[in-house]
Image (cartoon, one colour):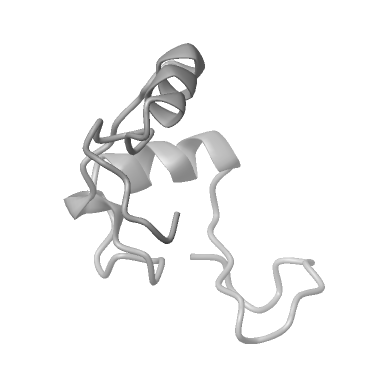
Length: 75
């Protein structure tokens, strides 16, 4: 992590890292930070990708766009 004399003008509640964005994201995704630097823990997330056409077909059929299960009445 960068020290207070790094030349950046940010509030103290922000953490500065001494790497670029690509390196930061790689370390984040590879779980190379201790402790984990963000509040939303992505390590337990189940990533999913559903093509927009599939999402559209599911929605029109009354299904959830991502799971394909029936939508609840309040959606």
